[in-house]
Image 1 (cartoon, rainbow, N blue to C red):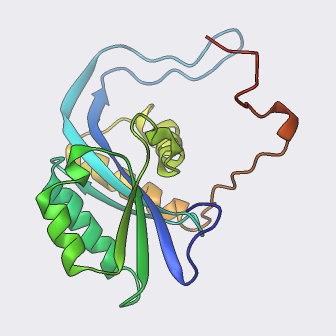
Image 2: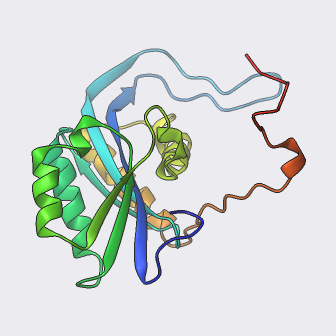
Length: 194
């Protein structure tokens, strides 16, 4: 799907980042200085959690995002509905997702029956890292979540959505390529890594 997407279709890499904590750190983050790594105190106040649903457009790099207080199949279907609403009517939509049980419920099946232009594709079991949205989740983790100070769950939501809007001003698609065929692993390879 990534290297040879269907013509006149849009391909989204979709997943959710669950249980993002709205942590209000009691001590300020101390910046990097000569001979010292960045650090912060270990005490914090936890205001609650939030889940972030994201759809990474594999062609343009744009991200559609939505937060939810829970992580259920109903929220996933609501997010799929948002994806459809953001595309031209009748546009063929391909969704790449991992094998999470919430992605394969009766509610999702009913949604797919009523939206024949939406096609689900699943990454192999234990291979969700193949889903390109995971790379974008690593970026938002580094840029916003890991060092963030959030005074409430609404503050966390506001900062996540602001980041998505800012990111979409200059989105970057993932360009996967493998150049050195001599280093490719084959059934005849004798070197194994453990």
